[in-house]
Image (cartoon, rainbow, N blue to C red; front, side, top):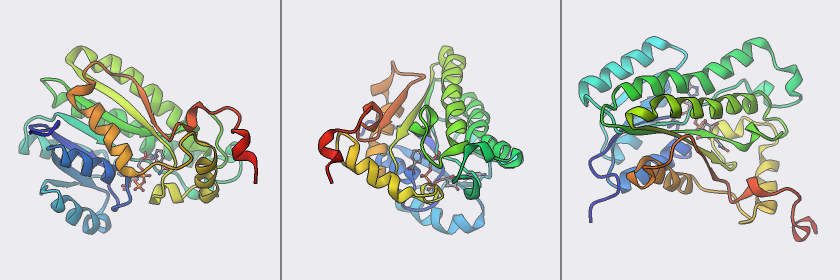
Length: 264
Ligand code: NAD
């Protein structure tokens, strides 16, 4: 039987190591038959990303730092030359100064606010526009968000504001690209131990709280996020766009924790 993603080619942005959510997504896409290209942020990460990409049979690798628009342009020029067109894109990129992922949101600096928004939010719009231009027969785009966008999560601070703007971007881009058959969705993942996740103060408490209070009483894996991404990027989700799809053990539905979970 041919895989769900057989014959589809896509770009994966945001693998830093084998704990990255983007890596969980890449593995699941490859296991369903997708052909993948990867980006890496700077030479230091190339050493990690290249062997991972090769393990999935991919040799198409581009450097890309989204703060450097010339590297974004070079990436899409390279993709256009190698493949000519694209079926899907995964954007799993975020950054904020960890000194501001603790304490009060009110103390966020102008410089870090701007940098966080450019890397974690605006880069998605810039990249989605270039990707959609390579999708003449339609396609599917997915980015990653977190529930701190709509509800206050201690220490998540400016990243919560960036994710709120990212989610709004998903809706506007879904509307812009819908007429050409390009779908745009986001996965709201529960907390996962990754490099980016570790930058948030008291991350361990967040994991433990999720384990205790989410309906499934556990955190999620990068492979579970990957499974949802396969659905959104495949033709199974051909009628779905502009959506926020939660992969968080159900944590987002909870108001008051269950009394059983409150017993020590
Ligand atoms: P990660 O550290 O593995 O991945 C973050 C990626 O962002 C890295 O590959 C890094 O190279 C890239 N990046 C940062 N600045 C960049 C720049 N200027 N140019 C290009 N790339 C840049 O962490 P992750 O948790 O896998 O994060 C992936 C996405 O998932 C992020 O958007 C994050 O906010 C989101 N997310 C994470 C969690 C979690 O708990 N880990 C939960 C929900 C959503």
